[in-house]
Length: 171
Image 1 (cartoon, rainbow, N blue to C red):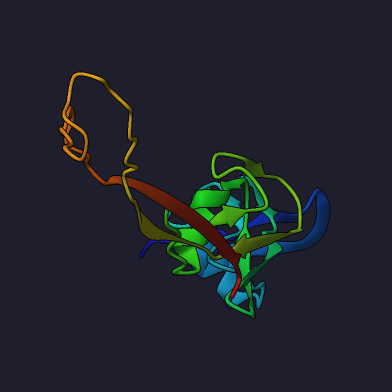
Image 2: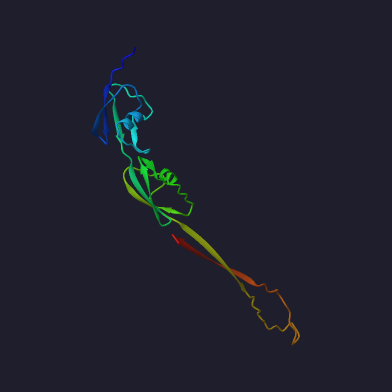
């Protein structure tokens, strides 16, 4: 016969004590579920969720905060705890290309609730070619017989290209 004595564990959320719970032998996540303390997948929990609770330990929960991302005319809310903008975009299944604009640097670590805007950018280049006809220049000379002409240099048409670049942002 083995007797295990329950011991108290303090639970803190965002620096405030929210509960004293008792356990014998369970993981952090199991203990929190047993006592109805909800945690999101993005909350930071210490010790780790899968660790066995030890006597005298304090379980700390730092709640994730919401980050609102606006893209393609829609708002998406994702949970965040010290993630980069790139990580949040990936979490929300948002793919950006090289021309798209993001209101925050992709490497920026988000430390509080905020709004991020992704603007879709489309760049279209149009080309227009025009022919520039060559010009003929007549020069009077006393070397040639009257009424005769001589070609000194063959004319060649020229060409000019106009490039028009149009940038569309979100439409």
